Length: 146
Ligand SMILES: [Zn+2]
Image (cartoon, rainbow, N blue to C red; front, side, top):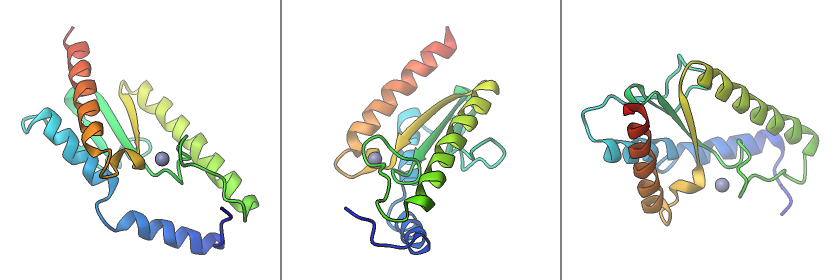
């Protein structure tokens, strides 16, 4: 489908979508909290780390992002808008580049970096995402305790 919106208009719409309803970041926090219980500290929206991770679990040496499908070009829903391509292509490419750099920096600091997508938090997928997250967190803990 062609992108019928001009870039600025599109930006407004995307930010409005992100700011309404239950944001993926909040759902991510809820799932992580459910998975690891109340005793371990979970920091949110950590400005002091590269890329400002949505979640930091210090005792797991782990950061987790909940990425928007459009801005971060998810393999399933990330698409290049058909109009205003000269605006969006470099912008989306830059986002991808920045994500990669931030991942490298975070790993260099000793963190594992997980990325989940906006679509993982759709109501129909939320439960499965919660289960997957719980399994991965359990594995991460085993790995750290070895
Ligand atoms: Zn997606």
